[in-house]
Amino acid sequence: MAASYARKHNCQPVANFRPISAKNALPTLASAWLAVVVQSAVFKRVASGLLACALGSVIGVVRADEPAAGFAPPDESLFAPGRFVYERNCVMCHGRWGEGDGEMGRTVVPKPRKFVSGIFKYGSTPPGFLPTTDDLMRTVRGGRANTAMPFFSHLSERDIRAVVEYVKSFSAKWRRRANHAPPVPLPPPPDWLGDAKLAEPHVTSGKAAYAVLCAACHGEDADGKGPAAAELRDAWNDPCPPIDLRLPAYRNGRTAADIFRVLTLGINGTPMPTFGEALSAAQRWDLAAYLLTLRPPPATRRVN
Ligand code: HEC
Ligand code: HEC
Image (cartoon, rainbow, N blue to C red; front, side, top):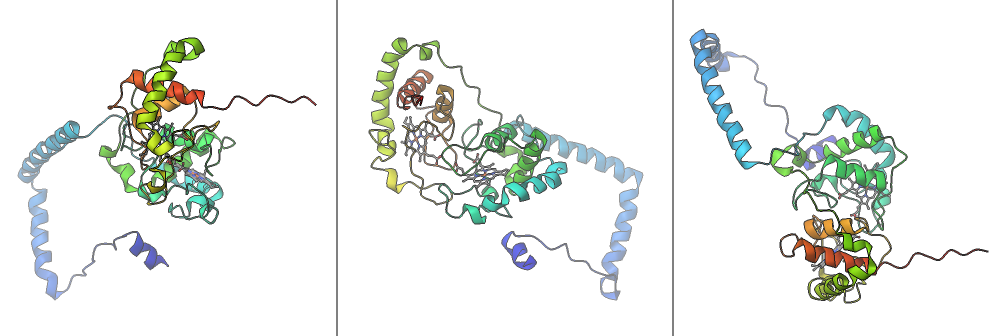
């Protein structure tokens, strides 16, 4: 069991240990001399100069190539309390080793996230980057509408934070600075959105853009049954049907700002494209305005 787990997760055995014997006495002697040289003052001065030089250039390279902001390595001090929360609340779907293979998760669509893949859908960062800690906490606290991912608002913020750090322990991607980026700043919704009359021309232009850009996947009537829908797969090679955009709730949230964010950033690991560059902000707000009109009217209250 332990051996197969080690094989599967590519765990390396501890480096070979070689006891001193006549056969390896020579290298041992050589290393003793090396130790004397290394401890000499002259060597120390030269080495520390070289080290400072090397470190300086490494830091320079890191600064130049990799986004520094938004990076915090996983907080290992929270792994133990996080594991406690995980094993009571998450393991039945996400699986003991974060492989998404828990007993309760086998039949649900979409499947529980495989944390080992290090790919996450719900983020505020640029496409292709890991989500922020806040993004993950939002998913756990609020759940994700129209999926089996439940909400855990009854857990304390401390427990949610801890379990989120534990979730990060399943993939080495979280330790690499290059995979992190700060959230993309997004503009506030325009004022016309609150006024049905002012919004009318925007809805019309959003509807026209929808027919050209979205209908192939989401369907002309936004029922999620466009001609390309059946072919779509996600990064985990599971079928990934486009969303029925007439639903009262969306996985990513149903406000104009939520729709604008999805259009700007896309959805990692799924065929939902990013329109942050292809469309202007004005065009993305028009599309959001059109999608808001597809929401069913609130149910009328029945008084008995
Ligand atoms: C009943 C099953 C179930 C349980 C229990 C569950 N999840 Fe999930 N979870 C899911 C499903 C299904 C998804 C995939 C949703 C999707 O793809 O939109 C998911 C997705 C996620 C994601 C991915 C979010 C992203 O951005 O991609 C995180 C993080 C997560 N769950 C954390 C947790 C944590 C932490 C717990 C326990 C406190 C938990 N889940 C318990 C079913 C579950
Ligand atoms: C290549 C196919 C494709 C195209 C084109 C496409 N989408 Fe999507 N879209 C998807 C898929 C697949 C998903 C579901 C992602 C997931 O699994 O969460 C999605 C999800 C969404 C969501 C999130 C719904 C939710 O529940 O949170 C919105 C909003 C959306 N699309 C709007 C649009 C709009 C507007 C356009 C056109 C500008 C568009 N999409 C174009 C495939 C597509």
